[in-house]
Length: 133
Image 1 (cartoon, rainbow, N blue to C red):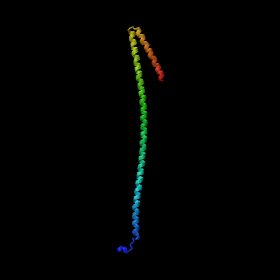
Image 2 (image 1 turned 90 degrees about the horizontal axis):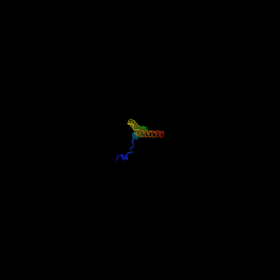
Image 3 (image 1 turned 180 degrees about the vertical axis):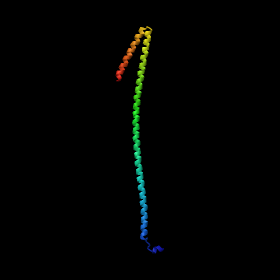
Image 4 (image 1 turned 60 degrees about the horizontal axis):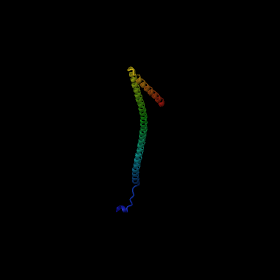
């Protein structure tokens, strides 16, 4: 009741100090928000750099895998070719051994047949070699 009759107003210094305190609180909140935003954006930049590095490494690994696959396919083809050549050599050696055995047994008919078979086989392999180049 007493206050109703008296027109009490805060002293100018009190009013200014209250306003100043409020401004300080608001500016502190803004600064915190700004600082956290800056920190978050800096972290996002670092994360994006890390992601770019990961992508580059994945591309490198992918290229290496492709190279390894190509090399593996090449080695498989070479292995198959060597295997076929080895089988053909073994067949020729077997025929030669049988020719030598037929000559040792004086079996000229068998000798002639085996010799002709060996010549045909050699001709086929020569044609096959020319076709592969």
